[in-house]
Image (tube, each protein chain N blue to C red):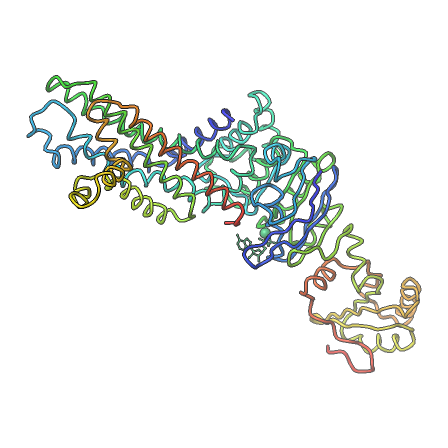
Length: 247
Length: 327
Ligand SMILES: Nc1ncnc2c1ncn2[C@@H]1O[C@H](COP(=O)(O)OP(=O)(O)O)[C@@H](O)[C@H]1O
Ligand SMILES: [Mg+2]
C-alpha cells in the first residue's frame, strides 16, 4: 500500500513538471501574491514588520489557483482513458486517491515555499515575530489542503476539467465566505448566535484566521484534518460509485 | 485461467452484456469476436475490475474480481481499448511506474522492463513522450505495460486496432509467442485475426454469445461449408451452365466481380461434396473451361459472423432455374 501510494504520488508529481505549465503556474502565483500584498494589502504603508497583509489574501488567491491544480486530478484521467489503467492495477483505491492528493498538496507547498523572499525581506526590514509567520505558513498549507480535498472530490465527478474548475471555485467559495465578516453581519442581530457560530465554524476562513493569529490551536487543526478526511473519503466514494455506473 | 460466470451489465435500461459465461484455460488464446457495440469492451472492463457487474462475476486464477479484486488484479495484464497511457510520460518511465506498482524489486524490474521492451520492439522510442508516438508505437507501449510482469492472464481489447499490416503481424506473433503458459483473451472485430492467433473463438452480439468453438468449427457452420467454388472468366458462364445441367446439385449461386465470376455449387441433399468436386473437375476439364479456381470450401468465418450478427454479406444471385446470370 505504502509503496504503491508513493509510486502514484511520484508519478503524479512528476506529471506536473512534464510541461512548462507548472512553471507558468508558479510564476503567476508568486506575482499574484506580490501584487496582492503590496498593492491591495498596502504592505509598505502599514509600516509593520509582519506578513499579515501577505497571508490575508491567501484564501482568495487559493480560491482560483488551487482548483486549477485539483481540476485535473481525476477529470484528466477520465478524459484520456488512463483511469482504466490506474483502476485495474493492483492498488487500493484509497491509495490512489491519497497518492494523487499528496502530489497536488506537495505542488502547492512548493509554490507556497517559493514565496520565501517575502519572508527574507520582512526580516531584513525589521524584527517580525517569526513564530507567527511560521504558524501562518502552516495555516496556509492547511487551507490549501482543504481546498485541494474539495477539488479532488469534485474533479472525480466529471471528465470535463473546466466544469471541475468552476464547481470547485463555487464550492470552495461557499466554504470560505460562510466565515467572512460581511456574510456573518447579514445574520447578525436576528439569527440566533448559535447558528452564526455554526456557520462560521464551517468556514475555512475562520480557522485560517485563527491560526494566522499566531496560535496553532488543536481545534483548528482538527477542523482542517476532518475536512480533508471527509472530502477524500467522498472522492473514494465517488470514484467507486462511477465503477458501478460505467462512466 | 479466466472463469466468467453469468456476467450481466446494464446501463440504465440498456443491457450491454447479457448473462455471459465462459472459461479460458492456461495455454489458450480465446478470441472474443463481435461487431462494434457487441459488449466486448464492457465484458473486459468487468473482468478486470474497472466496471462493477450488475450481476455475475469473473475469477482470475480462482480469485473473484468482485470479492478479491486486488489479489485478482495482480495476476493479469490488461490492455484497455485504445491503449490509454499518460501522454506526458516516456515509455521508459511508464514501464518503470508499472513495475514499481506491481511490486517488482529493482533488479527484477529492470530485467522485466528489458524483456517487455524487447518483445514489443520499443528501443527506438524509449525516451520520447508517449503522445508524440505513432499509433502503432503507442499500442506497443500499452502491450509492453500489460506483459511486463509476465502475468498468468492477459486481457487485451483490440490489440491490433489501427495498426498497419506489418505491425499487426508483429503483435500477433508476440501474442502467439506468449500463449503457451498464459490464459489470453483478445477482442477483435477482424476475422483473420481469430484465424491467425486464436485456438478458440466466441462470437458475441448484443451482449450474448451466439456461437463458440475453434475457428475451423465456426467456419464449418457457414452455409458455404462443403460447397464447391468455381471461378472463371465471365464469358464462359454459358458453358458452365451447360455443365451444371448434367451435374446433380442442390443449388448454385453466382457472384460476379468485373470479368470474373464465381459459382458456389452445393451438393445435392445427401450427396458427397467430394464426389461433386470430382465430377465437376472432370467435366470442366473436358469442356476446356480453364477455371481460375475450383475447390471445396471449408467454410468462411466472415459468412458465419455475418449470418449470426445480422450483417450478412450481399446475397449472391441464384444461378439456377435457367435464367442467365448477370455478367
Ligand atoms: N458507460 C456506458 N454507458 C452507457 N452505455 C454504454 C457505456 N459503455 C458502453 N455502453 C454501450 O454498451 C454497448 C457495448 O459497448 P462495448 O462493450 O464498448 O462494445 P464493443 O467493445 O463490443 O464494441 C454499446 O452499445 C455501448 O454504447
Ligand atoms: Mg470495444
